[in-house]
Length: 371
Image (cartoon, rainbow, N blue to C red; front, side, top):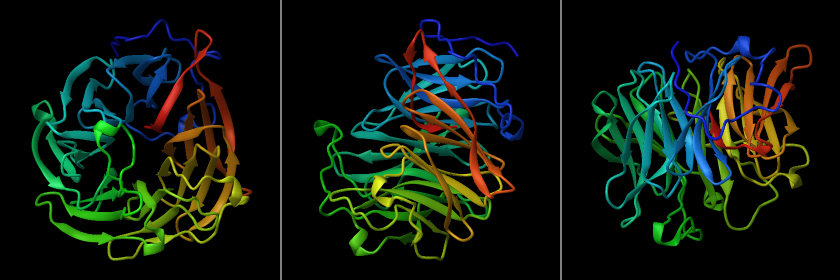
């Protein structure tokens, strides 16, 4: 494969590019076992691609990105700007050569997340009209340089992560309920009155199929991150706003036709958690999922069938999660990439390997999500 490397000041790894002896063989992506993330080096931002036994590839970005996603049908990757920025950068998945960069329409910004349609021909982005506060879903044509086709309402305020269902042509959207405006940066403007929800939306028409909310006492539990398994079970991770509660969970489960169900089994040492989920992902079998709490430095592993905690492990500033078969790779703002897999004899997830990634002695800071 011919590669063009967009390196920033000769990026090096302190122990060599990550060798994944116990986990890499389990990766089942179509991306040559690559890991993708937005990163920060010093005061610069980049899209980073790591592969086994190859030097890292970087593409410098105009600002901080949040999620980087891969389109296996079109051999391209997309970096989505973090709120309240306005850019999408699209690059070749193999060379990381920039293909196109687009801006959100006037008076709108991105929320850092996107997903592709099942055939890879459409890109869906969460956005906000910051003059009205309306949450939006942008629909873009991948085959026509990501031309904006239309907007659907997200049916809530502050849409964050979204995903497509596998069995129906619906989107599921986490409307976090928080209103912001670029004039006030990232300040949250409606904490006292926020009303988060999870909405199922028809892709073609934008019709609201179903909407679910938590009870009134949980109205400050901002539903932010979701993942969907092949049975269309949805797990969600929330972030507590306002006063921090010491009882209750920020992790839950639902599916179409069912209420939102918060996990009732709390992690050990609940007082040491921060009521903040930075990322949540199913492993590829669809039974287990992992959730990160970067503020508390915890990665927790759950059984989705019983909604019970399998175990949790300490990991400083952990946030990004990339799944495999009964395994996960995580990243942190402190430059660590860790690999975890299920120990079949104990039924617990264990750390199999860890790598610290540096640039000439300076740590690389991975952003919140890993693909």
